[in-house]
Image 1: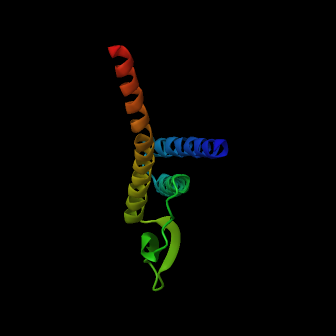
Image 2 (image 1 turned 135 degrees about the vertical axis):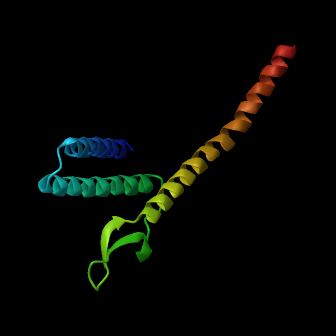
Image 3 (image 1 turned 180 degrees about the horizontal axis):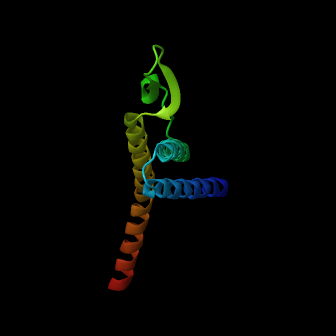
Length: 130
């Protein structure tokens, strides 16, 4: 688990670095070169955020998407080429599944701890009455 956390912290640090780079590019005056660099930085940031999301999904046991319509398809050619990026629907579904996995995790802990804590409260109540 320590390896997972160190990798996640590395991914978060890299994400912050890419966001800072993108913010610097947004503050520069408009030109064709800056627009191209800004677009490239935005694409790199988007791919990195998707990589983080897939990593978090793997940590919570969420299956990666298998349907081809969850992936971006290049439409500028006659052939639709599947790229590694996820579309917005797929990102929202994975985020939803991660939230549900977290909820189930904490529900499991609550279902285990509530009976134990209620027994302790009952024992304390009996001891205080005496």
